[in-house]
Amino acid sequence: MSLSEITEAIAKAEKYAGRAPGSVSLIAVSKKQPDARVEEVLDEGHRVFGENRVQEAAGKWPGFREKYDGIELHIIGPLQTNKVRQAMELAQAIHSVDRPKLAQTIARIAQEEGHCPDLFIQVNTGEEEQKAGILPKDADAFITECRGLDLPLRGLMCIPPVDEEPSLHFALLAKIAARNGLDGLSMGMSGDFERAIALGATHVRVGSAIFGDRAY
Ligand SMILES: *Cc1c(COP(=O)(O)O)cnc(C)c1O
Image (tube, rainbow, N blue to C red; front, side, top):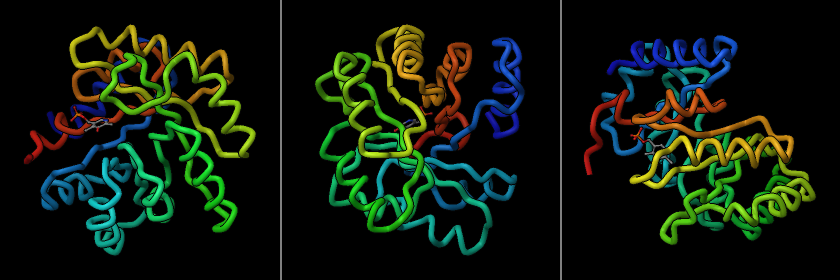
């Protein structure tokens, strides 16, 4: 699919869900994509991008920022505490806040630097051992803890297990967000962003459907 086809599909899904036009933000996930493909999408006017790894983001986005204005970068992958400062310098949002130590590190650096990206708490809705994210049963307490640290919490994020119906996970994430008074929902990828929008996604993270398969 092309960028414009994705944008159209998002608009349609917003409409079917009775959501306001433009209420869903498309994060184009550019990890492991060739620079030339990323530049094509920049040339089409898109400005919101997602990267999994801080190191990869640091290698390519300062250069793109010299050529293109208004780039908004989202870090969506697992974050080590020793990469937090760099992530906070590069990104306008971090979607993978998933443990107290990380939240505390972000809060300390935000104090020092006087600014902080928008934050999403990653919830491991499938309770998968290999996956990052706070467990659903610990989410309320962790949200309270982040608020106590005065962090700019924008919402919640999840990555459903590959072999399960994602809608169940999107609904669970939406429920945890609602009972905590959070309205940001980062959920939905190439294969399921329409279902995520139906269940309230405010941010969809779409990679391969825009750029093509990644080179691993
Ligand atoms: C890679 C990635 C995506 C995009 O996945 P696609 O299936 O290519 O759309 C979304 N979210 C996260 C956290 C990712 O790592």
